[in-house]
Length: 476
Image 1 (spheres, helix red, strand yellow):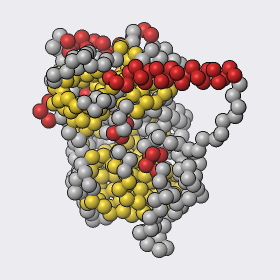
Image 2 (image 1 turned 90 degrees about the vertical axis):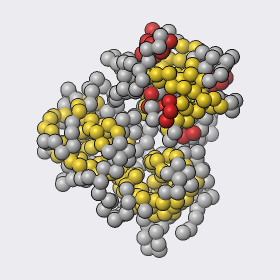
Image 3 (image 1 turned 60 degrees about the vertical axis):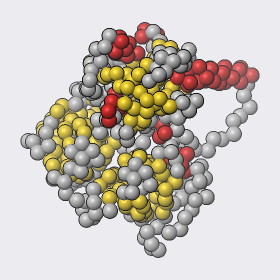
Image 4 (image 1 turned 30 degrees about the horizontal axis):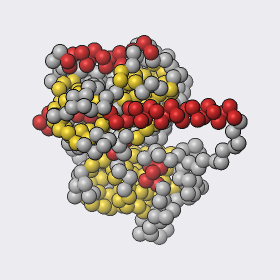
């Protein structure tokens, strides 16, 4: 295997969303613009300096996320999905200064919001985050997110509030939110919390964050904190989906009768391309193989499969006959999955039939073990690119176990592939260009060093690479 580490030395940063391209030299700024820029920078610095000491990193078994210290004696606000799998109802909380505490889970939101409260043991005189007035949040105001994306603690990103859902009040922002930001604060220019970051919208035509994140509004947070202070928190998490739009996913069963419905103005709309979608939910088991088919004579079908936290599990455009969509994949964990029946282009509408089948716990078609990832996608102009050579890339995440042997395979008949594997701290685990001379597909077989999340980067060998690909990650 030929190693091209110097060419890809920045890839770990790029794969974590820290760099997105080469920044051209700035033109000479007029005095007014320079003053405005300096004021913006000073606001950024002030918000970070004031709020970041009270933003914590949370480790709950194999799950991790962020949280905010609300009281000097260590009441911490976070997402329910960050801590709901913790064993013994305790988690580890780490402050930015390096201090670590054991925290007890006080309870979850009885109204089903993705919220949880923790109490640090033996804590006092801690920094805290102020809470904004619920009626102070406006579309267009600046928004700041602090958290631990991919384990990178107290990361700071800046954007605006893009939308406030008129029904649920959910805050939409373009401040970069990634896995690990969950439970951290969304702040205004006064360093006050306006929401709790809870999810990213990552179900576009290719994987990855498309600049749309969601936060639970402070109007929902305050009643939860009141319930916690009164000892009325729920013992179990009952979180629901916060997909954009007002449609609640329809609960269906695997191996049930075909679902016949219609995409149109009464459906939800993906903000990325204004395409219609209807949402369904079903219960799945870890290792269970499912076959999901969307057929239509009226539109080009597209299927998107998400876990209960809104993370992409699989997507497909033309995996079925013609323009029908088909996903065949093994489910990574026991969960409530969300399936989006979608059209490939914005504005397409019409009737469709959706079938969901379980094939049991069958092995993968290659004869290897359980499938951890099975993704298809397209590298195309406008995708993220490496600054070293302009080559395009996508990224995917999966959970692995210490000592687990896996094979990662990247196949394309349209471009010369390049494959990289990182842990979620950005450390390079392995990379490959060609399986063998004359074969431009890429393959890695590695034994994972730790139990944690890992990131696979799908890349082209040079800046000419464009086209379709298939990525699989399987146990050996």
